[in-house]
Amino acid sequence: MRGNTIRWVVLMAALSIIGIVVTQIYWVSTAWNLKDQQFNHRVDLALNDVVERVVEISNDSTLLVKPVSQISNNQYKIELNERIALPILEALLISAFDEYNVQTDFEYGLYDCIADTAQSGKYVRYKDGFRSIRSHSRHIDLPKSEQTYFSVSFPEKESYILSAMGFWLFSSAILAVVIVFFAYTTFIILRQKRMSEVTRDFINNMTHELKTPISTIAVSADVLASDEIAQNPKRRIRYSQIIKQENERLKKQVEKVLQIATLEKDEIQINKESVDVHKLISELVKTMRVALEGSGGRISMRLEAQKSTVQADKVHLMNILYNLVDNAIKYSGEKPPEIEVTTSHDRECLLIKVKDNGIGMDRSEIRMIFKKFYRVPTGNRHDVKGFGLGLAYVKMMVEKHQGKIKVESEKGMGTLFTLSIPFK
Image (tube, rainbow, N blue to C red; front, side):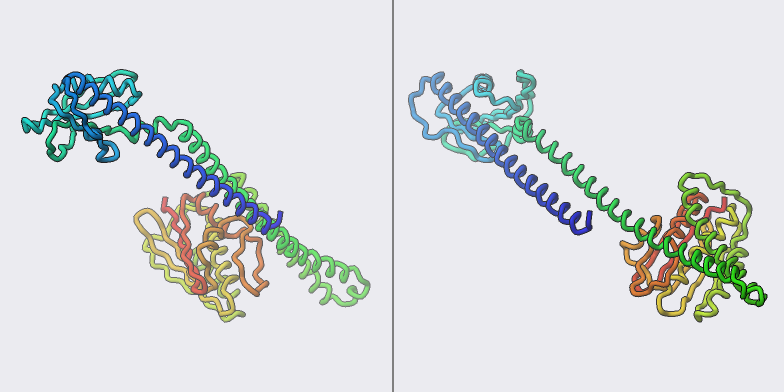
C-alpha cells in the first residue's frame, strides 16, 4: 500500500472516530439533561405533595401560590403557612420521595419565621431501598421570609443521575476502548510502514554495497585468467591484491549483518577484563588520524578521567568507539571533520564523549538512529556508505556492558555522543 493511501485511510478513519466521539458527547449530554429534568420534575411533584399533606394536617385552607422553588441545581425552598414538627416533616419527606422514586440521599432543615427559630436539619441516607438518618446537617440557611419554610438539598444528585445512565456509560466505555485500539493500530501501521521503508532502503543499499566488490573481483579474476597477464608479473600482483582487498571488504560487510543477527539472538558472549580506556582511545585516534589526512580533518583527545580502567570486552569496546568516530567522519558534510574525544568520570562510571562538527540531526532523527537499518539523510550526498547497523550495534553492546548512551545534536551544529561505562 502506498504512503499516500495509508495517510488517507488513517485520516478518514480519524475523522470518523472524531465524528462518533462528537455524536456520543452530544447524546450523553442530552441524556444527562433529560435525566436531570426528570429528577427535578419528580422532586417538584414530591415536595408539592408534602405541602398538600401539611395543609391537610393543619386544616388550613389558605392557598399558597407556587410554594416550591428551586434555588440552585440541587437545593429547593418550600414555604408553609403553618408550623410543623421536625419528625412529621421528616416522615412526610421520606414517604413522598419513596412514592415518586427519588432514590438518593437528601438533607433538610426547617425554619420558623414566626418564632424566629431554626431547627437543626438532618441528613437522610438512601441505600438499597432503606433510609437511614444522620443527626447532622450541612444545610445552608436561607433568607428570612414571612412564612415558615423548609429547604431540601440533594448532595449526591450528580452521582445519582450518573448511576442512572448505565447504558450511556457502557457505550462510552466501549467507544473509549475502540479509540485506544484504533490509536494503537494506527501506531503499528505507521511503524510497520516506516520499518518497511527502512528495510527496503537497507536491501537496496546492501545490494549496491555487495555488488561493487563482487563486480571488482569478477573483473580482476577475468584479467588474471587472460594470457596477457602471465607476461606481466607486476600487473598480476596488483590484481591479486585488488581481489584480496575486495574480498576483505565483502567479508566485513557480511560480518556486520551477521553480527546484528547474533546480537538479537543474545548469542554474543562478553569477555570482560580490565581495559585501560585511555590507551584504547590513543590507539584509535592514532589510526583514525591516518584516515583523516586526505580530507584535511582533525581528531583530538582530552583524557581528563583520573580513573580510566573499566571491566569490559576490549574488542567490542574498541568497536563501539570506532563506530562513533567513523560515523563522525561519514556525516561531516562538506567541511573537514573536526572530532574530539574526551573522558571524565563520576563515582560509578567512566564517561566517554565523542563530539563532531558534522551535519547534526533533528529530534525525529535522534529517535531513530539506534534502529536497525536507519541512516540519517545526507541531502544531495550519496557517498556515505554503510548498512545503518553501526549505531544499532553500539547501543546493543553498551547495554550489554550495563552502560548507557546519550545523544545531543542540532541540525547543522554537529553531534555529541556520551557513553557511560560502569567501572564494575
